[in-house]
Image 1 (cartoon, rainbow, N blue to C red):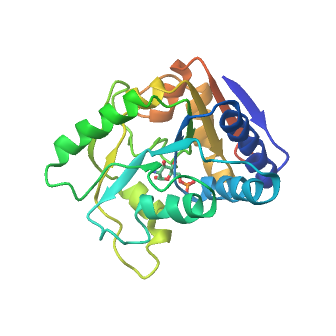
Image 2: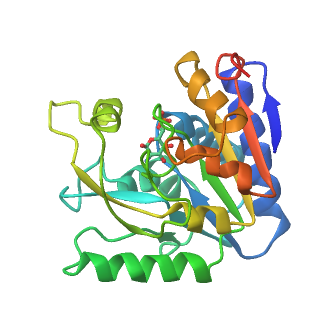
Image 3: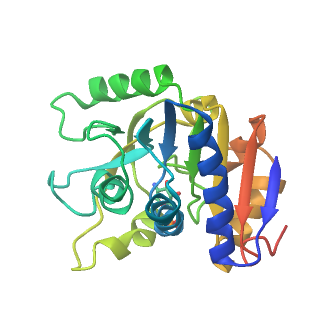
Length: 240
Ligand code: GLP
């Protein structure tokens, strides 16, 4: 596992953007796995800047979301598909059909989970961008998720729902369920990039990177992967 501690939060986003840029520039067609959250928002801002000012093109890229809430209206701005459209897709030259996501409105959700698992596995993902939840989740694989878990419907923990309440600013409840890629599919990506910033994530990052492999800390599964880069700001790295 390669750990990079950048000078500050901005430098961490730039460093993560360097890794994404190298991946995108290196291939004509690229399958990029994307996460959502406040941390990755800064990364996408930097990628958009590079598209607008430095000619970084996403024309040959397909992006695959890690997860999606169940129970929101199709045009809800808090849907992860809407977030990725807003923060990245609409601001770069991604093809219109290049954003892939589990469909939480599908009539048969277990079948939809199988479809998405198959899609992601056959992509296959070359670089997977990850954030980390305060409770150690990756995507929406909450504590207790098996390391060989596949795409499925999950119940979100109270911790995660309260951490993610910020997007639901008008007091709307955070959905109780989501569809998430499993840990097995995440580990199947060729390369993983985890970005974490802020003191609040320090203990979680330390448990994921230095702690024992355990389902109580889903992100500890990253220790099993042969090619992981963890990019941190000094606060997130403070307990390593
Ligand atoms: C959500 C996403 C995760 C992400 C996490 C971190 O729960 N499902 O993929 O890693 O948020 O979010 P933030 O960067 O806002 O702390």
